Length: 541
Image 1 (cartoon, one colour):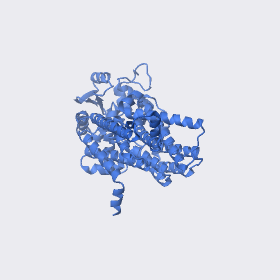
Image 2 (cartoon, helix red, strand yellow):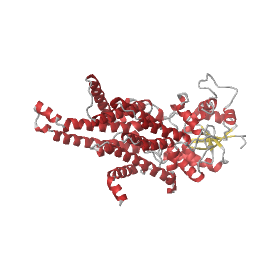
Image 3 (cartoon, one colour):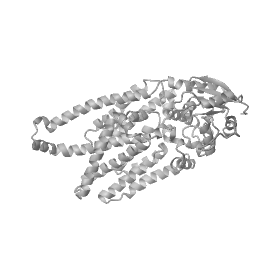
Image 4 (cartoon, one colour):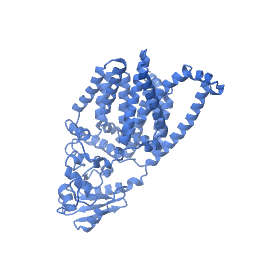
């Protein structure tokens, strides 16, 4: 009976979950392809963890710090993927997992809106669906992207509820779940600072809960102390721009790209942000103070959402991946502020007073204006949801996009010695090759930082080799004539094979292929439309 009561009480949250799951199932299962490179990585990590337990070494990244000092990449996420590996097919399991966490994210988003006592929470959920194609493409991947949004929404929920125990638990788990966990501290400090500014209260316990949960999770960690090195690589070590240049999500999104992707959200966000700033400045000029606790609480939440969403918006302009956080928090800011303004303008008679002053006909009554507004918004939202769904569908790709890398990986698995090292010229190919073939080892994947922090010289050898150049520095005037590509592959990377992709947009490996063709120490042993495999001769295994 208690279970039934819980379901009845949360039936709308469950409906949002199921509606999201159904809508994106139509997109996810429109193709047998698993979209994205790293989607392949995490479901494979889940399978290996299921079969072998906790991994402390990762020889598949053979020329990186991860080889002997592995730190689980978003460990909690791929542990939670383990049940999905029992569905028979890893691709199917990854698709179901991505749908589950995406749907859970929208359900938590809706739950937060309801807890903010927003009257039109379901409309704002629809607004979320209509907001950004790029956002929902990312949320649709079998990566811990929607997972991280869930944690950040729960952090916000714990803060507004002033539930320090929940804040501690979520902060702890967030460290194990995703590398964006420092954002939890940012949200907490922002919330505490605003409470002090508006009400002169200092929430020491809130700060301790956030920092305590975060620090505890760093120290009480399955990968301690290797995780400390991992965090320092990501957050403290400075690295050349070239290391991130190949990663699309780390590139800036300019205002035109954001407008093209999310016009309704961007326009709404900019207008409401401007209104907030103007009202805030006028309040300072007039030295206005709030006379009751409810107004103060609303102003704290509005200011918090404004600061956080603006920070994430600026983050998106600097690195596109911050759209994961700008979209949901930007919409929560818009929703909360619009409903506050709506209450002031319509509910207290301000609109009708204005209508009477202007002597407007009854056509412009507040009820009619609401009806017209809802009708127009319904059409816009419906069209936008359809448009964004089509965009996500177009980004999913087809099985043909994976065919070549799959066939190459399976050929290597069946025709090369176990644990032989494949020099993958483009480290973006690693995740898919690893998914289809753990029989071989590779030299680099996931992030160039993992090799750079092992040896910067090795990293520059790797980077320039793709251009057919021998150089162990970022800038080289000419080749190191004392070395050949064969020498680098043999002595620096212990490579037995080299895989050269042929269909990588933005990369031209013609010079490298010409060198391989002209050197008898290399033998082409396999090729298809997507790439070539060359054997590096005379190397012992």
